[in-house]
Image (cartoon, rainbow, N blue to C red; front, top):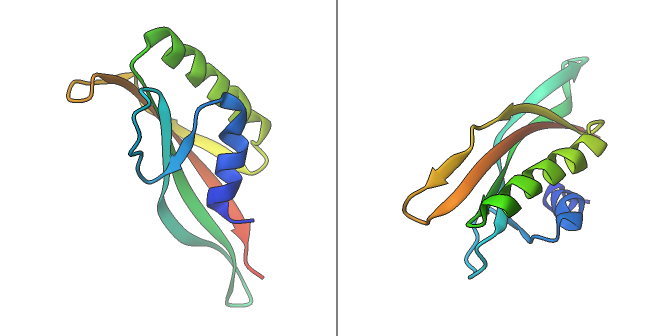
Length: 115
């Protein structure tokens, strides 16, 4: 399974569509995610055996209560997958003046064995 599909499947229970890289719809509540770093993380016998992906999941909403509830649900869902996604950073609560949306970013590390 591709990493993009895996993330979409994990976020599906939130009831908010998750979009890779960019959202171009009309909904005022949505999730964008992207891979912002990829690097070799483990070697054995001079060969790469593991890759580390750094992923950002950004939540956007114009509804303050929904925004708050969704970020708590997102944390719970990702915690259920902490064996594969390790949280390492969370942004402060932001308000984007140009779009009039609340925004919070969650960053995770994901490791993949190289075959």
